[in-house]
Image (cartoon, rainbow, N blue to C red; front, side, top):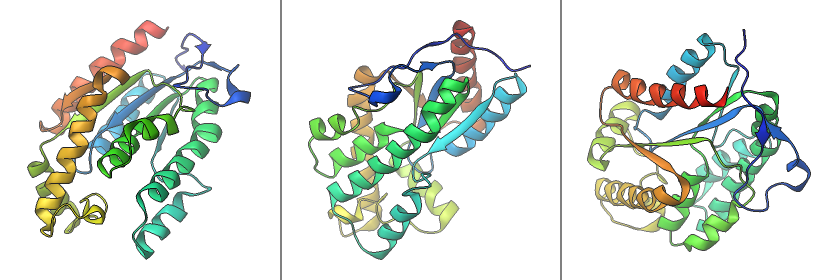
Length: 237
């Protein structure tokens, strides 16, 4: 039997999407943030399995998954370095399309929406690339406020080894190579990831981000996350 959660109005950070403002959310939006190599996707998979077994209807979302523009972002990034604002607007369009056509309809229908990253990564990336925080944060004034936001915190040096072990190389943008932090790719990666982590620390209080030690084994991190999520969902019934 599908778990039913109490309905309530959608909450937006700013003006929101005008024609959707009157919709109610019968579901919950739960975000798992963290850099590449932090174990985000593994946690999303484990949480999905657990919640479905408990009777919740679950749908997942993430960056670059818009049918409208997701493939275009990948193609553009592979062809040439993108300007910092061009990159930010590409991702904002991807997010807006998913928000309007996937996330909000799912919340209205009563799903638990699990987001493998959300607007916070996009804002942090833009700020580290030199775009003003106010511009980056105002850009996402149409976003729905999540119910829970977790950030899997892993030291950059550990991330480097995890990413290199998994992929055998480092992503050009995730290493900050496009902004010239260092000629040494390892140093550039560490500096960039430290900058991202700093932005998340600055956003914690404003956006209610819950920092979680992602350096622990996957099962241990999952128990931590799942207990917090289960506790929250009980209060929504």
